[in-house]
Length: 113
Image (cartoon, rainbow, N blue to C red; front, side, top):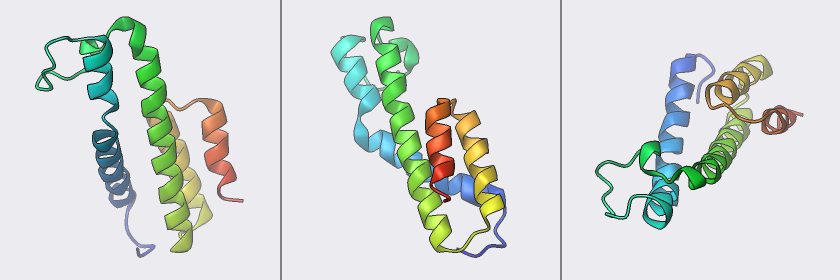
């Protein structure tokens, strides 16, 4: 993974692994089927289909997946010797974009040490 790639490339990498991880985890489907929409239809799967009492739990599970995927990518990027400044920007950008709690944000930065 060459250093000269732009941030869009690394953002696309994260988007891909996040999409795959969330899809394979079935978090949203499980919450809809177990606590929300009783029809079992995935065609209209959204936060609105999740029962209000389950939304916080679902959001926490999604944040955990996001945290794990960002952490895994940062480890990989370190192995390819990407500059620390670039990794810090990546972490800050995606922690903010995905509304990760401060402790997760700090833990991601600790990966760089």
